[in-house]
Image (cartoon, rainbow, N blue to C red; front, side, top):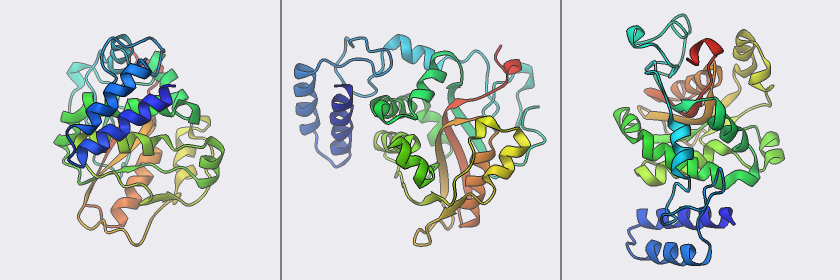
Length: 268
């Protein structure tokens, strides 16, 4: 049921981008009457019209909760007295991207949400998280002035097994709400890689080396690109994707993720 609600709301936003003012409202009113909207994470009935994001107030508060400021280079939480252009966590690392921002920290309910987003059955949740990104991170996104949004791709065999590529849904929802072109298929995965979460940091770098390519017909010369993904931990995948985009002509690459994975020492 929530998949139908999310899809209709998504179509409504796309129609709004095309210039229609009344049709999305009619579609939404009919949807709310026939299918009362509920939170795409916890399932509770929403007490407001079913406009995206379909996430209740308690859930969204948990998802965006941050007790510490973030490093502007790698998005990891830092103590107030450590604020600067980088942090202890990323200072000795070479990233091909210039900056990174995250909606929240990969723990508790946000961690559960990111895990669910990797499954096709939870497409409505992924779409809603894309709209929540737009709602909570619009200022951060616009401060980096991206020309286009590019989702981090999944190897075709993995996508076939999962039936979905979450970053694509995130980018489409984010782009629809913020009026920034979301271009899927520009960046593609050349080969299957091991699951990054099972590897040591140094192994993660080798695992994704030369794992991405850019379609030749795409012109990236001088473009400012924002990479979209569900989670970033060491930054190895994002950095390799950014390196590929910059090699293809992008002048600047920033990263936006739903969750920033960090060690236990950064969870205070």
